[in-house]
Amino acid sequence: MTPTTPSNVLVVGGGGREHALTWKLTQSAKVKHVFCAPGNGGTAKADNVSNVDIKVSDFEKIAEFAKRNKVELIVIGPDNPLADGIVDELQKHGLRVFGPTKGSARLEWSKAYAKEFMASNNIPTARFLSTTNREEALEFARANEWARVVKVDGLALGKGVFVCDCFDDVSAALEEIFEKKLFGQAGECVLIEERLNGEELSLLYFCDGKRLSPMPASQDHKRRFDGDRGPNTGGMGVYAPVKLYQKCADKVQALLVKPFEAALASKRFSYQGIVYAGMMIAANDEPYVLEFNARFGDPETQALLPLLETDLFEILWACTEGTLDKTQIKWSSRFSCCVVAAAETYPASSSKGQVIEIGAMPESCQVFQAGTKWDGEQLTTDGGRVLAVTAVATSMDAARDKAYDAIKMVTFTGMDYRKDIARRAAEECLSS
Image (cartoon, rainbow, N blue to C red; front, side, top):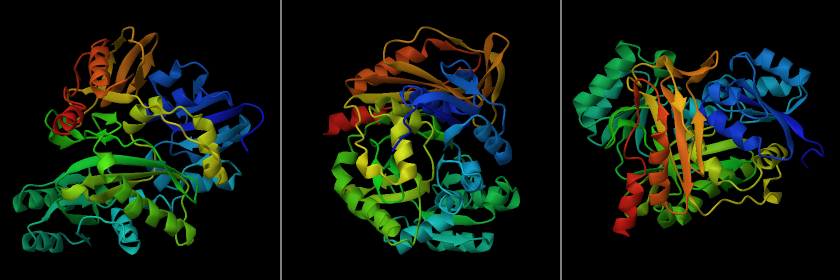
């Protein structure tokens, strides 16, 4: 049962995902006030939201603040604090937290562990080798022409993946990881994986420790430039739902959801929070799990929450109670397109101190800020991915057009964005 009186909620994080979470939570009649630690320029000026100047890594201060301000639910946004055990620490203080414990979040912070989990539960994934030895990795790639993806085992802000075309590319990636130490401790172990061909999907689920409840399938655009060129990023845009998913939905249910729920039921594995499966839909609509994340995606959250018609607070509370089966979750039948505005130098470097101007947004459009802050009365840039514009409409073409019309209302020096977000959705319609 949710509380009978409106509650205070604390969202931990400061990106676009956290802005979207606070935006949705404030729509709940069961939420009194939302705090965001540390928040950003968007949450600073949002109605019924207050930024809290506490780092996501300062678990003790977060706990003290939550107790002092009678916070009844804490929602964890980013991956790093989950990997460092923020949920475990806050629960020691008797606080209610939405998110997996450190042990459960290992699904994300160790790709090698995630592979072991998939293998032991018969969840289909790409062939791989896990190793801490550069020479062993090179030999494996040399002997297997299909082994052309290099991943660091640990967390790397979405940038620790190299999709290679040839052995020389693999060798260069391994040099970046082992010799130049580009990813530090996160790169002490690597995975050399089979390069699968197909369409990638982001499948997110609410999990209460017993069952998975799906969100609409979405498709992220991780490469920096149009046509999926350039380096991997944290995500340059996303759309939902994805028509392709309908062709493989039953297989995903059988090959991912059922085995995951069976692992929970057997008590071999415990988990409460968001399960994010990065999928590849290969030939014959066969699904493979590329990796797991243990939290809301970014920018997937900015595209998905505008489609959610059920009270988000009630869903998150039910997850912490283990009563998700008693909560009917309803999603809009409309379409969502989210376009990220980034610094032109991103991901190599960020933008700092550039003045941001945001004009009036069209109906059903929302700006979710990420790398922003206020300098007096002026909103300025403070990151690589600065903000995202999400549009919702009755068709994907309309949502896409509306998103690109809306982003023209945003300006800052050095602003750049991909021009082909949701292009695949149009191609799906033409091919169907």
